Image (cartoon, rainbow, N blue to C red; front, side):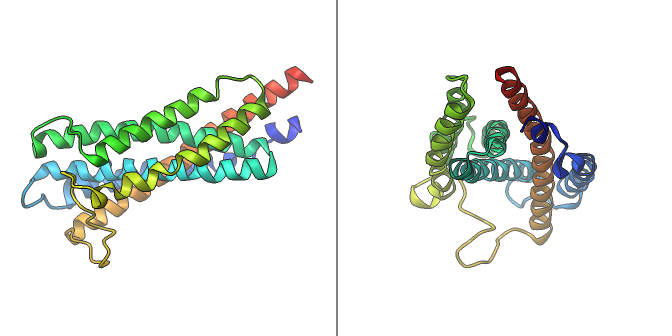
Length: 233
């Protein structure tokens, strides 16, 4: 079992490719966002924060959905690999949720006139950030791998309920935050085509970055699991 944990996987072998792809994708996406896309008619060049802000928020959603799926898989199979995926994705999700809040504050100052507003999406995002920090803290309450993984998996399944709440909060409640401009009910994005293309490119680039970070973090976690199992053998 220890050998199977320490043995390089296809994902680990693909890490250099993912690293190179993330650099290229980010370079192209930043060029599109900062130079190629036009300024907004109302906000001017401030709108360029949109591209990284939305991409960060997308990664937060993606990371926490992966936590949810990996948690289900762990409870179903009891395989440590799924627990490693869950904790890796949670840590990355917390990082990008924090960046989402910071970038949102930077964007809010010139558009709303304040750094922080107690509007629904901001509050629910902050709650999501706090909940997943709690998820990571819970994992440190036990040294027993199986018990810790089981408790974390249950919590990881429960906490995902806040992801759709965050996304839909602007349509459920009266909010300063703008309504969806890409995924609209009438399927007609309101963004300029170059803005939309830049936003899609940035989202793809951040997704590749997520994949790269996941391969690195899961590898670290699997090796840590192997050392714990070896020490107890």
